[in-house]
Length: 102
Image (tube, rainbow, N blue to C red; front, side):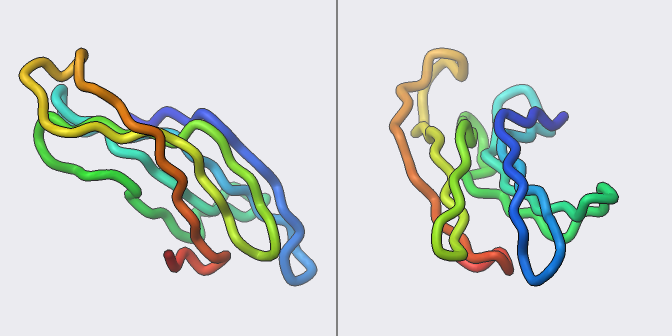
């Protein structure tokens, strides 16, 4: 399951693209922050898992900004905990270029 929390469109090299962030989960005890880039036809150009995909891990992207060719994703991460829904969360800022390199 994927949940998008923020979308931003950007003009890059004579075309417009969309960056999206949020989280994805494939099991009940994990959500992983994601960043993806799409063209305006909805074709996925690339995607990145930003957070830890292990058990009892929670992360998510909540906001996007683009500045000087870099994509900034604000979000949260967590560490191990006894109960997945009560994990302590920490704020985080990820930075990627338009090719998906950190």
